[in-house]
Image (cartoon, rainbow, N blue to C red; front, side, top):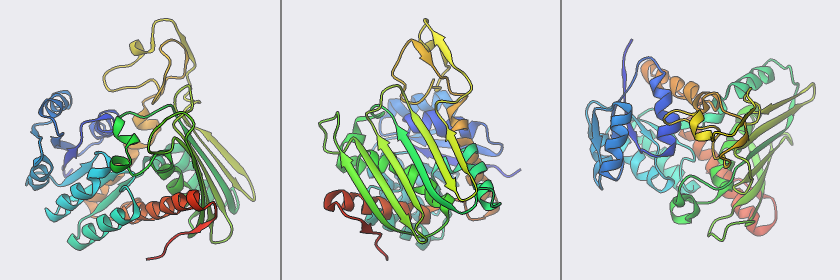
Amino acid sequence: MTIVKIGVLGAGFVANTFHMPSFREIEGAQVVAAFSQRKETVEEFAKRWNVPRTFHGDDGIAKLCADPEVELVDIALPNFLHLSAARLAAENHKNVICEKPLARNAEEAKEILSTVKKHGVQHFYAENQVFIPQISKAKDLIDRGILGQVFWIRCREAQMGQHSAWFFEPASSGGGPLLQLGAHAVELARFLIGKKPLSVLGWTTKVAYSTMVEDSGLILVKYKDSELSQAECTWVTRGGLDLRFEIHGGNGSMYANISREAGISLFTAEGVTKLVGINETVTETTEIKRGRVFPALGEHRTLGFVDEMRHFVSAVRSGEKGLETFDDGYQVSKIIEAAYRSAKTGSWESIRED
């Protein structure tokens, strides 16, 4: 089997908790280089994951992208670095994975898409929720007509806070949960409905945080034949990650509770930190240290990351187009942009055409 050699940009939560555990389980995937801004951070990361080469500092991204051994660049960086990292990767003729959202806004997303197309590299939009096993099953049921014509999809992703301070800074993130969590729900619904989205109604508020970005929001997306998707997104829900979906069609409905039905209900007086190994979580953004918990059975698997990265690595090996590309990421950015416009105007907003 041909080995796909990967350079990972970023050594934070996403890379440690989801991307690296996934690559480790994929036959033929080899991470050969890693970058983080701080030398000590990337060296610790490399030691943990047995990565042979490291890069750091202001020119570290450029050096990793120029590394002749790297074939596929995985961008797991804060949103404000996605554009420059994707540009450097494409200019060095590397295939690119970019963690969602593709960019801080639609303008940046369009530039990223134009850059990878200009240089003719493969591009993969890392929307893991499309690869969640329950969602793959839903897509199969829809395609076989089991649910009938889908007319409404409801998605809820709620948690308390975020993993890093940059999420709360609009210059770094581009927005709050309407962008960071809404990007998941918007693309999942677009993927399942399979039609052109036309207009968006958005709402944002600040319930708990005195920050420049919202901490809660709603997105309604209306599709070509009046199908509707609904996204509930918040950083102010107690009790850990709450991730669930409803899919309603003319012949049936499907419900999936990804975070609260892991198969285990546990009461512990010992403390949840004793339940997990290195780079594992009980459930993402869990708050409690003792009491009733619902341990995840490997979140990088249950949240779709292993199947996602396996698909991308296979596509690089075969040269085929990925299930999710930067074209999809750009469409998501345009929908989210319309949601923010709507939140200001209080009216339905059309999705801008190119």
